[in-house]
Length: 429
Image 1 (cartoon, rainbow, N blue to C red):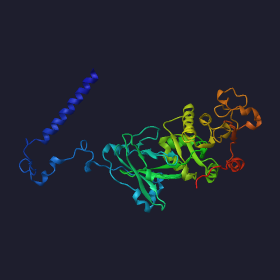
Image 2 (cartoon, rainbow, N blue to C red):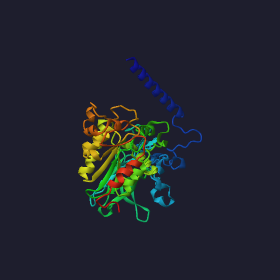
Image 3 (spheres, rainbow, N blue to C red):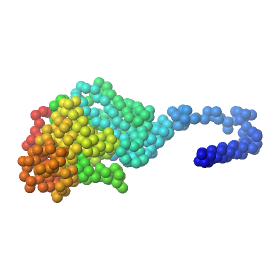
Image 4 (cartoon, rainbow, N blue to C red):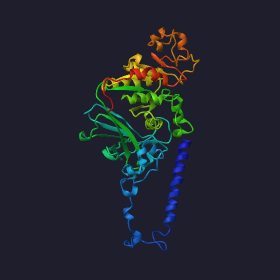
């Protein structure tokens, strides 16, 4: 009760203060002060113009006076390097936001905008999706997007120039969606496109991947499989350097992924990283020299069984919905094995890397399974019974085949990829 009285007293004091200000402003009882203009007497005086036409941006946010710009995003040209090229001036937009709320939603430090990949068969509808949004911290999930803003979606022509493929408008979450017209659908192959928020020029990339049934792909996790440790992702998300931090790549990872790509296989990058970081995953893959391929991020923060379920769903989508083949799957954790194997990849086609996850003297059952392990999670790996214990020391046998720690992928490429990666179907031609 006392607090309510205090609050009421504060409100009354503020009201009295406002009244006193008004009285001071009107101390002449409505008569103009020397030098002022009385618009009631001389309404045609220039000082009285537009007095009645002042824009209330709360009522008319679309008015020119209400449109506002966002500050420049310094990472924009890393998401879309094409923006740096003078010849691509048509990709650069600097229109204004439709209202202050949209500008505020996109003015935060961490721009989390991303474009999703489109995976389809030739002749099928091709739908482009993405989201523009940002937040003041880099924690997964937080942020807001602009509503009702125009998006231009670009494709690259044969001569290297860019043209508008489709246009869209953001919803109240900053998400957008557009279907490519039948006449403009992409043909078989890998196609990179860019989506740009017209209000401030924020750019994100997508991929449109068009391949027939039974097309052969290779699936790989990212952290502690292509990078040296799961902590590399955490360092980029929450470390002192933030997005300036460049995750360390595992020795040989670029070589083995490019070995598959050079033979015509499509690399599928499946990460448990939240989709907030999809654009940064693409930046890292591109700047570190990994081959171009679809990149998938989790809808939220997943780990353990939730990560396994998420990865299982993606594997099932590739194998069942698209009817593409996954010849081999690479990962570093039990959640990878569970997701891959339960999703339909044969266990003997699954490789596990333990460069960071399992030190040579590790006996951590969260990290590895040994012969005789009582852990239920190890039951699906009965083939361990045929592996001499001495050969298991320091090796994380999460799948039938393991890549030993502290060695690059070079032996793996020489012993497995070259003799076994020949395709029986034509690839990217």
